[in-house]
Length: 301
Image 1 (cartoon, helix red, strand yellow):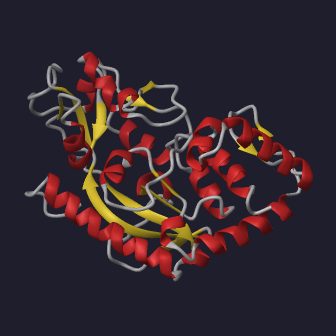
Image 2 (cartoon, one colour):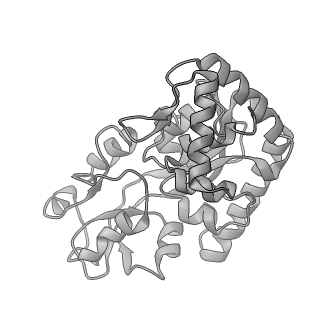
């Protein structure tokens, strides 16, 4: 049973049987056969739902027991931990020297991230605090974890959110900008409900007005929209530096006064697990090193 469980779990994470086949070094046909057989044997009714995600619709108690046992085994070895990045820090995290690397995720927004942590499909996630923590949460990058709804959040790095655009955009270099100046131009937004707190913050500045129907993040379809010369996008100093080899993108002379933070999320009952603490220490060190490498004059994330 535990041998077939990774197929179910990875289908829930990636929503793509071909990706799962590559991750497990199996043929796609074998992946389909395994999940259908396990679903039948355990009476899970594990199928791809109308929303594009795989999930079981019955016998959840049995599945939960199997996942608890499987997670216990994974947690014994740092190299076996299963995790995802957020949407906005994907490029940064893929540039770090962290093993194992983050899994490809098949969703936009963080509600599903929290769900998969609680059901033990994921062991941890490194995402934006704005998108995952309760509004108004204050925490320091090196403080004790902030606990909410059975999830613990560890701070990794803090950075300012920016309004950015292609270097040819009419507002580049303009002074004393106001939200009214943004009304003439499209400004990226996700579909309603995906990034509730982020959308409120940006809409208060006259931004987040042009929805993109995205199922998962890619810089080509997010920050890359700035290539049209008119669309306003959102960056931070780190992501902008990483994207500089692919995009001619610059921040506007406008202060959002919004600080974002990357946080490592785990279930509350896993806070003191050795492999989790080891990866947390590695992540914090790597964040500091990458910041100094990319932005020597930028004191800290």
